[in-house]
Length: 407
Image 1 (cartoon, one colour):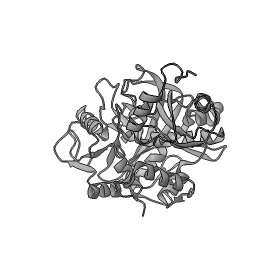
Image 2: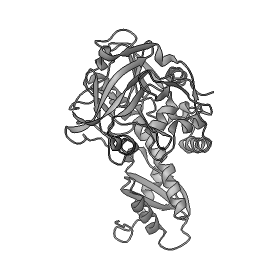
Image 3: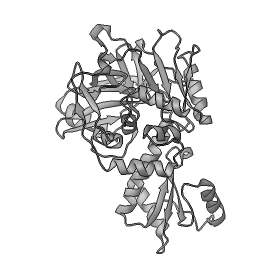
Image 4: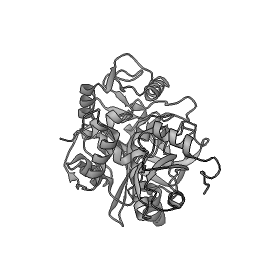
């Protein structure tokens, strides 16, 4: 039975030993981020902070909800020790059977409603994640929801969001993103701002769909229903017509503002390095906030793996690469994007049935332009999921001149 919300997921993680409750007072200013970063590097249970400095009892933070394969397995209601190969196989099987959402009249995310002048983003314990960040980040594990009315397409995307002032957020909106595409095509072309809703603390499967990047113009909520094997319950926002997961912990309602930017960043990113310097980025005006009693803010502390983002995106990229290889008719055994590669390297196993097959793989990756810059091609006697085997093959079989190609 799929988890209705993040709280049921936390209970399941507690039963499997994959979450730890931290009852001591912890500072939102760098201390939360430092603890989350450390547990990510050590691959320890997710930290659940129950006592945040400067905030009332009940305002909590869950760090890296999906930061290990064990937690990913629990999210899919599989035994926590399920192998990653089996996790991905089950995930891929469920993706093939999307389930439409259902719209409900009310939901837990409506327990508290704040509008207009009462809106204050600092009401929530958004952390200063890394030393050197440009500000406190409200959005590091969430969904930015926008809709293209001309294509009947609602996009869920995970685009970082920094608090600028009590009613404004700023964040990156890259030209290649679905959010940018919808904004330019459906709203900027009509000289309009774009309505958005930002859902924080959704159930784990909805979060996976938001973090994934390779579904094209598909409604992520339908795919979430398929993976959950049960429809997602959606509820209408208070100040616009967007629908959000009814069991979200916090929902920010507002708009991506036409012709308006605000300074954002820098931010410690998924590569393990700081991103671009502080510069103008997309600006969001928050018109209303709805939230549950005792809200739980979910967060990721980007950096050297493993993080929730690298766990989800590595799996996402593997499925995308498999589609690319099939389209090019390349006989492959499997694909693996190791967590440590921060989605910049892939291992492809092939059946070497003709000459030049590795070159064909390289050209396929170059044409796909997906941000993977290093590809290791191994024969079918190497298990792509067994990295010691891969390193041995690379070291002992790859000629330093003839065995390396540049594209």
